[in-house]
Length: 340
Image 1: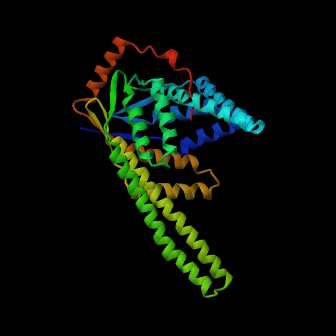
Image 2: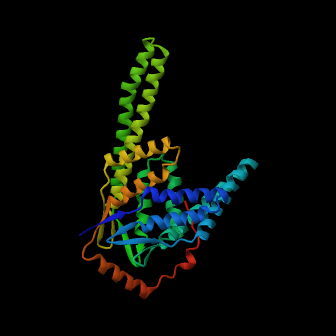
Image 3: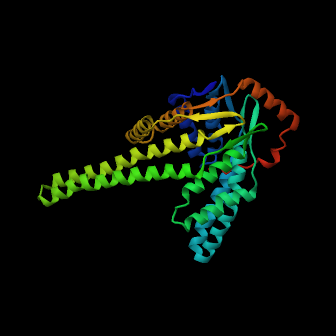
């Protein structure tokens, strides 16, 4: 039986939260942004429903503030060190690289542990060693392959994130292959480059023709602007295809024990939402941003469903009993959020 996700948040409701959060963050020089994130997440989580029940967010604003202060100190320290001396800047960069994977690992733990469904919290395991492997060593190795390892790295990161996540004591699993990620990336780049070549030969060809024919300046400028606009339009059209394929690939290969997730994003709908959101934000000078955020989040969530084998109520009840028996024991590990 399929259980579809539903999302009840509205752009107008979120706009009121967003504008207050923005103003208070400005007045407090960014300090309130940690509390703003808690307000935003609580609203979005409580608006997300599965099988008639909503999710809950329990994040602590102080922990989020700690993460933001740490990020500001590290980034600010790096910029200052770089101005003092290239050598000092290099040492600070090494320090950043050494500590960042640990911070990301702690942030993942914080985010999932502070999410619950029907009173049962999610969690994230893994180890610091694995975090350094996926967030430091493999990205460094990828730079030496001119990015050719990117699909492999992406698959390994999602496998790490999903297989180390759990609901209560029930573990998630992830079985998408490296080959499926390479196919997705190759299809995206083939379409992107193919479209760019067509634009170069057809659209830019007409531009060169207008220049060769000694057309007036208005015609030349108009044809050039049209060519540039067509180029950007194609890029903003093919990017949603990649986002659609990646989300569907990831969630169609994710399970929670025997329960299978399914994502059914479509290229056309994704393209329409992204382009109209962009247009709305530009025309309103940014005021449409909260409406755009809700539209995109609503579509992504409601395109996702869970194929439940048996009864979800029985599964949640059984998971709750296991959690009660084993206990969480994670509070001492989860007092920090990088808030990326």
